[in-house]
Length: 629
Image 1 (tube, rainbow, N blue to C red):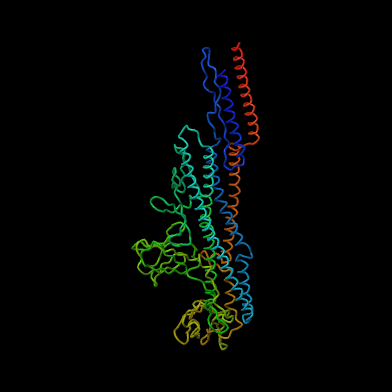
Image 2 (cartoon, rainbow, N blue to C red):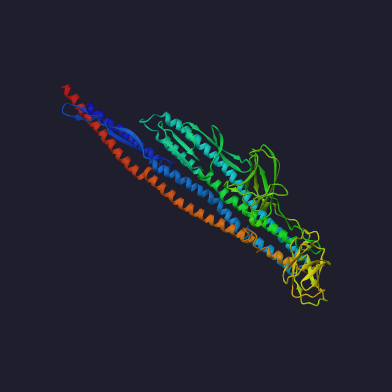
């Protein structure tokens, strides 16, 4: 009787625990990260009664957590990848809209500006047309600045989001370390596992994986070690390391992520970061920085090329045209680790060779070297770095001075900040130089049939540029200039005098004269205006192969293509993540219908065990009654 009672009571206790576990599952059916728990029943050891072993009931040997570690690792990896692309996509789509939208992009503004240039060229004496041109010039300047301002605001947003991501990572790391302590104290290998704590820890690990790529390693005491980047430990047992966002050596406003290790801070390799944090850093380096550089490169080419041609013309006041636009010189940023007092001045000298990339100029104590800021690739330098012989590389000129120390570095940004510095320096419409600065003429008394072409400006800075000259032929193949010299004449060959170039073609006779003179009072002349209009389509950039409008078009197309690729990756990673989540839910998730069936099953088993107890009681009562007789 007692054995029967103990056997039935063991069943009641086991089924009661099973009902409690089932109720726990149902209560957490909608709890994120919860893994279904299952009671594992085992029979209690039998008792030998001489003829065989009679069982002594059942017991719950373990409460098993249904969790697939491999699926969990795959889920973390997919979460990291999706979060990275999602972070890039949310920013790149806005960047694409900014550049491609006619109301915010450059194309419409550039077209309007050059249309105004053409209008003045068609009617160079119209002050009204000139005033409209100044208005369009101010408009395109504001367009450049507005785009650059939006890009700068995006970088500020990235900084703020990087700080938030770093704070989240540190919070999750501390929380995981705290759970490691609780889990390790709950028992060693073979002891019952704290399933709910394990679920909480895995949920935190997944949240951490949203922010940064992680790898995990389970320890013998049940704690979980977490590593990031190139193997830096973020969590070891109950100890959590931290990340920090701090300004770079060159630019305090540009945040970098560092790992705060025992030996000091070390910069994280952005190629291995992943997650939302990695997406933010990747977008900044792979899309935002190149966009600002390309925009600045376009601004430099636009301003310098237009200024160069404008300076080669003459305005309504008979003065040579100066700069039409103002634009800042390349930015130089001194490393905060420098110990010397060196100086660096950079300028753009060749638009066609300019890449727009950022560079780092380093001094090793004896010589200078130049590398690309993003890749570290060496860039050949020519020259000696003096004002008379500056360093030159990829369209930029560098003059160094002062007393640099070994290890000193300077970052050079030829184009990144150029768009924000663009301005219109001409305010007087009559100062727009639409006329050619010089003109040529043929003496009416000439006897030969030779003719002279209009002049082309070669060097408007020549001191004698507007002095003029008289060419007189002393023979069919020789001439003098202002009565001096004896120069050989070749039919159609270019002749350069005082910074102007022209040709004489035909057969001159002795005494024939041709004149080069300042183009004074030529209010209706548009010789330089036509050339200013040509700046729009002239091959100025990338070795002289593309125009400024084509360069901007390439920028828009590149950003658009990259945005579509990122969107495609987001969609693909979303499918992968969803599939893994569904696989994990089918394995670890709570099925309410299944748990309801378990409730009925365990309830009936409990009632059956209770009935056995009742039978044991009846038998015992019968035995007592029998012994009373």
